[in-house]
Length: 407
Image 1 (cartoon, rainbow, N blue to C red):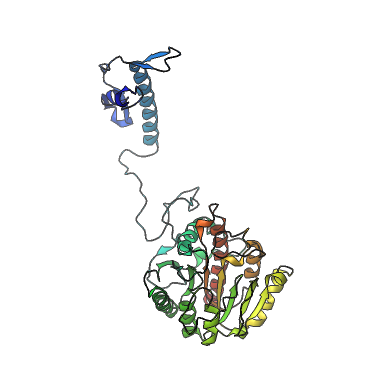
Image 2: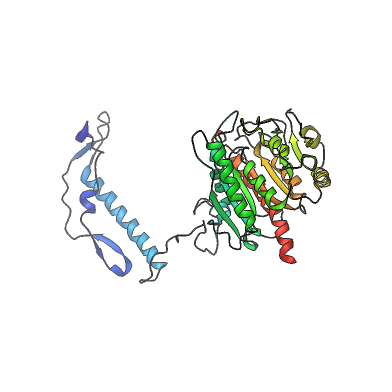
């Protein structure tokens, strides 16, 4: 139909081309004195009704309406800024901090660069208390893939969740130096799993050697191999507190079949983890337990008080250095549907969070949160739950640091 469409094309262009600025102090606009020349075409709005309007009249009405709005908007802009003041722009920063605001501050979760808790994005570990590291890897899954997008989803959720520390005391985001270390361990090809483990080990060891604690965001549950081994090299044999619906205690057959269900077996078998001083919580599947982990099944835990579960865990772990690994499928699918291997019958986010909160006082040297696969949850509740659990893990990592600072 092309030009036969009376409503098509730049209807206002002839008028807009005749605008000129006047009164620059107020940025007002008005048409030139001469009338713009517009052909008096007719636009047939329904041949059956016979209703006719002129294109010229329609153009003038819209043009003058736009001029009025433009003048008002320009005047408003002038009222809020001095004549010589340059427009404010978002600064180029390593983290996601926003320009200061008297009312909103960092509460605009949709704005800024999505680093974890808006922390500075850097690998400079000078004076760092906690480093947050992403591992977008999910080659080790046996069901639904997608956890490679977990670090990004959790970081984005943290822009909102990280604004609130309740019910924890204090604000570690301000009191401690926390950085977003960026992503490591991603790649493709036949050696992708080996490379991920090697790279996460190298970076984790560097972080621990600096005196910082490490929080890692996965990725699937294959990722603890590197960080836990690095923790053992720094702090000695590790007590593992493992929140999950699965035990992940299958043998990798000497490293030939490493996947997200083998790390607990392998790390205990090589004595990186002391299984007898370690606990698996909210388990509701059956796997071999050749290494002798202490298991708290979901069916029993959900009839217990969170503080009692935590007291039992503390009794088992004792004063050993602790690494906490939290698979988001430890939660019931109603609280975390966006994961690769969901299992019904688990705790709510609140119940799991209460157990974590009651673990305060342990010597937690490292932690991770894994298996968030955001594409299976368009509501975003899984990432939101992960953000809340991440906050608990960050506070548990901060506890030993705050004690050292007091000393």
